[in-house]
Length: 458
Image 1 (tube, rainbow, N blue to C red):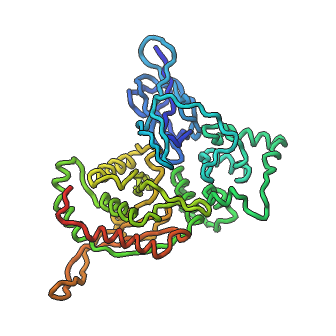
Image 2: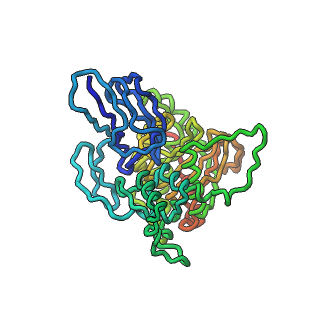
């Protein structure tokens, strides 16, 4: 018999650790090749770790809610075969990506290539004013009564200088032993918010701090009332939404679009498209294409805010909000959407939506969005006021398409006809997007949808 060490796989360039959510196999259970062994969670997505070998699970090296670093051994599997050196197989979720040399581009080193050695950072890993803390680290800090200032002062020993569970526990032990005072002695003007806090856009307010008991209304729980504890993803969504409302000045504009030509076009080509491509074509790829075109016309919608700086994004990465079977929400991102035709957009939309419902998304597939679309039409909603998906500055809600009587101008005079109409609602950050820009952009999206060519080929 031989032993196989199951590693926590790489899950993207930005992910250094993951939380063990649920073991799908227990010690003594038989495991098939490529069968899922454990469910894990990052700050972005939940996913499963499959075993690349068949065998029997001997031991679990991490327990529920413990945080493991990428490439650490999380389980031991006994396999058939001669006794050999313990084997480690590095699983890689992401595919090799060409290295970009344009300004602002991420440099991605293909898997299995030799990475350059980088000295660990001596300062906390804060990138563009944002420091990541895992849910477990936040939970420990809250339980121990650590302030945000104290948490920010802890030097991280994890990847990219991130604070790990052990870093927090060590700090707490030092603090309780009377040795934690030095970390508290921070050079911050009490009459002025520190420069770092001012430029973070307050991205790092944990919901436990912002919605602590002294700020919450008194809730009376009656007999028969059911108490449902938020799951991990719902907590993250709640924190993100509270932060978004705190950071941005939300304004929403509305426009009604006549999409009759678009509806007739889809009815005409959908059967042939499904037969040829093996998948259905929905309206979502068309909405994404219209938004990408409008962003090219009004690039100041494709920005982020960093303190007093406006960061204009080069890439047009469109996120599409997707409802999960659990009732939660996730936003997979179509990268460089402006460079895809309708067939490519349709494939990307169907693939991401399918894998989102099956918890198969990778962390890199839900990051770096520059604009978000949420489709509320399938639920019978005609319009809404969506919350901005930080650090973006705008989000578009598309309502249901309905038949309505409308006045049309013809060469023979005005007539009343049945038309397919829909409302587009866009919330935007009034700090950097004024009503004129927001209104013109939204109208341009509607114009692209209304002027759809009935004879367009796909």
